[in-house]
Amino acid sequence: MSEQTEATPRDLRRLNVSVVTAALSATGALLVITDAEVWWHALLLAIGLATALFTVNRSATDERLTVLVPGLVVTAVVWAVGILVAETLSASFGPAIVGTLFVQRLPRHRRAATVLLIGLGVVVLAAMPLTLGLSPFELLTHSVATACVAITGSVLTSLVQVMSGLVDELERSRRREADLAVSRERVRFAGDLHDIQGHTLHVVKLKVALARKLLGRDQGRQDRERADRELGEVYELVGDTISRTKELAHAQRRLNLSAELENAGNLFEAAGIRVSVERRNEVDPRVGEILGQVLRETTTNILRHAQAERVRITLTERGISIINDGARTGPVTELRGLAALRARVIDLGGELVVERSDEDFLTEATFPAPGASLSDDSDTVSDITARSWRDAR
Image 1 (cartoon, rainbow, N blue to C red):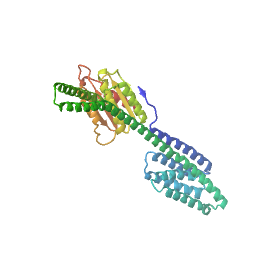
Image 2 (cartoon, one colour):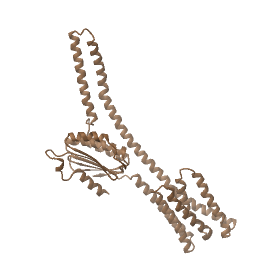
Image 3 (cartoon, one colour):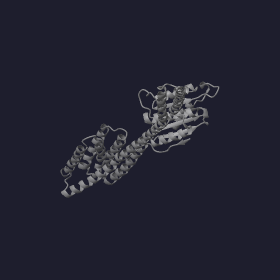
Image 4 (tube, rainbow, N blue to C red):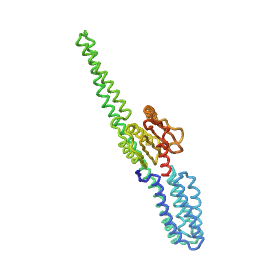
């Protein structure tokens, strides 16, 4: 069994928030230690820092502004008390963190919100001479120190948004690559279809035109024989084209299960999806071709219809099972490609199951061993996949 170990976008977002939180915690703790003169100063600064850190982590999973408003109110109160009563300049660290998140989450009027928050800060600083009796020089130094602390908190917090944007762009890029891979497969299919039918239809057109011309004459023996020969060739050409088109439609041309496994792995990797493959037995060559078709169609459906992060593929001697997470809620989408394959699997004596359980989606094709029925298998491929899927979680 091979595992793709690339971090998913969700993992990267969590890592981003964890790193920024650690930096904010270290910086905030240092400010508390150096700026607090008595125990209640330290308690006040610790409340502001804890509120800011809680808001950062909470907002990472909930993008509503209502999550930020309580944090902004608490840190603003801590700042006002810290500046005007305790004269702790580092009290601006908390509101700078939450205020930065608040401004970044606003879809509009970001500039107005920034000006409003800065204006409130200026008002609080302007009140310092009245409450603390500071000289102009002391007011200037206090203002500069407070601004430096606030800028530090704002810059560190902005890293969350910057990295989140990069992760979103990476995810979009991977999905574009997956869509491009699917598009390339469609172009290849269209090219094969053109190769099969384009030349044949052109020849058929010429031969039918010639037969009509021959039949339009006095129809001597030679003309009738030649017209009959041309129409016979047209009949054979059309029959051959129908057979070759069926082969192409059912993906029988050059289809190889191992190649399909490699192709599916590359597509999932390009989309940022972790995939694991488990082979319990060597696949029976008599069913390998149709199992490859099931795998190809399921891969396309996962890329187009799911928001998957993990896929597990299990192969047994006469079966394949593909299970993925990220299934969309609501009624199961009609997958016409799999519906057509189900009919072929049933014609060959097998069974194709498509079902959803919560956010997991299962596609399973199973063929009985020669002389056995499907119910004879005590340990089906879906049972194996389900156990492996639960163990992986």
